[in-house]
Length: 261
Image (cartoon, rainbow, N blue to C red; front, side, top):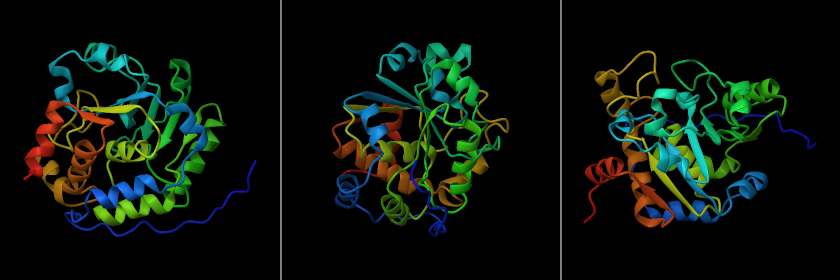
């Protein structure tokens, strides 16, 4: 056991609309110069990874078998447990679950620790680092509940996370944070599917409140998660990191929001 540092720093400012002045050189520096979680690094090293989001386009065609062929299948927040009727479209496995750590139903949803263990899920991962604002208490709560029955990964480099936040001027969505964190590790490749930056809503049953286009329009520019900076960040990853691929539906959003000359 190591001593724990039980202090917190405030989250950085969230700017309406966020910021998009960052470029690939800024992001690559963060990837190349960071601290990592050694246990998690050993788990993902050399693996093919798929990040599965809850966009409703996922039920337009069966991708389940393709998804389950990856070495590691990652799902986010309330995407676990997978409904039986969705398995042909989004696969059945969940090896890793990325979570915002807020268990309220409008946010990340319940942890379902026992269900994760029973289904073979190996990790729960937080999109936030330790020692950051109220997320630090969420981490402590999860560790108390889990009693080390499932492996737990947090964004390891606090300074790296804060720099990402400063560049974007907003708090990342869980899917964006998952991809940004993963790319600091020696994975073989990562495919992103089912992430549409709050557009079009979610797969049936993901949110009790359903889809509200007015709320979507507001979320794109304001609130906790400004979307344009995150779209630019994912486009930079997709254009410059050979390990990254995305669905055509996602590429259409990336190219439609930020044109390449």
